[in-house]
Image (cartoon, helix red, strand yellow):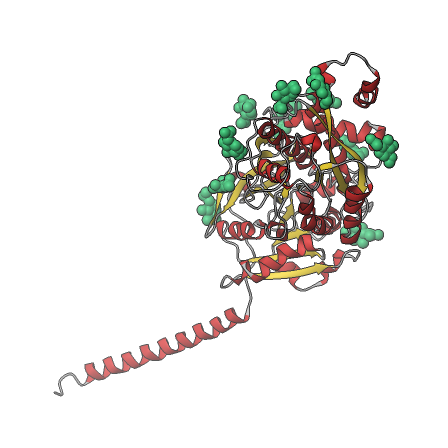
Length: 509
Ligand SMILES: *[C@@H]1O[C@H](CO)[C@@H](O)[C@H](O)[C@H]1NC(C)=O
Ligand SMILES: *[C@@H]1O[C@H](CO)[C@@H](O)[C@H](O)[C@H]1NC(C)=O
Ligand SMILES: *[C@@H]1O[C@H](CO)[C@@H](O)[C@H](O)[C@H]1NC(C)=O
Ligand SMILES: *[C@@H]1O[C@H](CO)[C@@H](O)[C@H](O)[C@H]1NC(C)=O
Ligand SMILES: *[C@@H]1O[C@H](CO)[C@@H](O)[C@H](O)[C@H]1NC(C)=O
Ligand SMILES: *[C@@H]1O[C@H](CO)[C@@H](O)[C@H](O)[C@H]1NC(C)=O
Ligand SMILES: *[C@@H]1O[C@H](CO)[C@@H](O)[C@H](O)[C@H]1NC(C)=O
Ligand SMILES: *[C@@H]1O[C@H](CO)[C@@H](O)[C@H](O)[C@H]1NC(C)=O
Ligand SMILES: *[C@@H]1O[C@H](CO)[C@@H](O)[C@H](O)[C@H]1NC(C)=O
Ligand SMILES: *[C@@H]1O[C@H](CO)[C@@H](O)[C@H](O)[C@H]1NC(C)=O
Ligand SMILES: *[C@@H]1O[C@H](CO)[C@@H](O)[C@H](O)[C@H]1NC(C)=O
């Protein structure tokens, strides 16, 4: 606010302090404020990042970075495009980058065209795999860590602990069905492995899961859904005695820390589902999330922003709960990647401005356009666009959620998947990191976190039993075993007869 006042009063001042003689750089901010997935809670994180960036002297020193307003993509393909063209065509501001556009459905169409205006698009809430296609999305970057290795890492977890059957409750939305489809079509093609798939259409009662005969057979159950479904299912599981150590529930870890409390927005407001009930069913469950999704576990590491994860979380929570500016916004578990996303834009533009001031056009020599300072960028300047895109791909700093650098597809390293366990501690629940799965090209491996082992993880040091696979294959097997037994018995009888024959007639030669 103070800055805006200064900026607008500058023309009327005769003596201007050099420190305030900064040009404004704008990025467009499109996110989903309505629709299926609402990452609106990213805004306090974005604002906090901008405040820190603009206070810093060593980054974008001649510029002030800002957005004009927040546009709603409605998590919709068409609306997102409308909003993008609103920014590009209807405004008297030139945006040097776009932050957006909320959920993948909204981001995909914009990421497909935005490069024609020579500006990068940075997403923090768009997980879709398809966005890795560099031929379609040529100037796209994201701080969101993709979920594409979740299914492989679940497979590795199964191998590590000797399980062969898994039940998956999947919410019927692409974020979730993609993971389950991959489990079904790839991971569970392993011989002898059995996947019990139960899909819940959004808005329908997930408790029908329990009405099926299979429900009791499967002891390892993955809830692949938004937290409101997990809440209802786990509460019911408690009353059916489907709790640790016999049963193991595997949940997404990106749920907010307090999602299971009866005062959370995900609560079913059912009197049977008290905090005590939820705690008892949660203890022992496993959570799973790509590494780099949550803020760093060591909350005292000072990141490039100058904040530690602890300071950040305190500030963020304080803003979203107490600042009237952010009334009605929902706390966002991925707010860290929103914060890091704005820093990535700032660092990328800073690298570009350094290259421009030193006249370094290496790699963009043959691209048409004038070499002008960033504040003179216009959407037709391909040379500047080239330098900005290169600079974004060179970003590398320690963010709140881990190292922020982009691979050739504009995404962060997503090959490590983190596992945590819900544990009871001092009358509440904590999530303790227990291990990671690293997924490489042709193999995956599980590593226990320091201090963790089968003993800390499982009740008696033994992983829970997955329940016996009862399949046609095994029934056949039993018949086969019986036949072999019969054959063996016949063989023995025959041998005995022969032997007796020999013995009886040994003197007759
Ligand atoms: C302030 O900015 C104006 C225009 O951007 C420029 O002409 C002038 O030299 C700048 N002054 C200082 C002290 O940097
Ligand atoms: C910022 O502006 C000053 C004065 O115009 C200039 O000396 C300096 O090189 C600029 N910094 C960058 C990173 O361009
Ligand atoms: C840009 O447009 C807004 C209204 O749409 C107007 O208030 C503002 O003065 C304009 N800014 C410039 C620099 O023309
Ligand atoms: C943990 O237990 C599983 C199953 O018994 C076993 O395969 C695995 O090797 C154990 N891991 C370690 C590190 O001991
Ligand atoms: C409340 O939760 C219990 C346990 O899951 C369930 O049996 C019951 O049907 C729920 N009540 C309502 C009104 O949804
Ligand atoms: C819910 O309850 C917990 C524990 O009593 C409290 O710390 C938290 O602030 C409450 N959350 C809300 C949104 O009221
Ligand atoms: C956390 O980070 C701080 C500062 O970098 C370091 O001193 C401390 O040893 C770290 N703690 C753990 C448990 O790694
Ligand atoms: C926000 O972060 C600053 C450090 O930048 C810290 O001094 C302050 O206490 C934090 N505010 C809150 C409400 O946690
Ligand atoms: C020019 O920029 C490129 C890309 O950032 C960098 O690799 C190269 O070292 C720079 N060259 C000079 C002379 O600074
Ligand atoms: C991603 O992480 C894996 C595992 O830590 C590592 O082997 C790989 O080199 C990393 N890749 C990049 C591009 O950083
Ligand atoms: C439980 O509380 C005690 C005392 O307040 C504290 O020392 C201990 O670290 C806490 N344990 C956990 C697991 O948080």
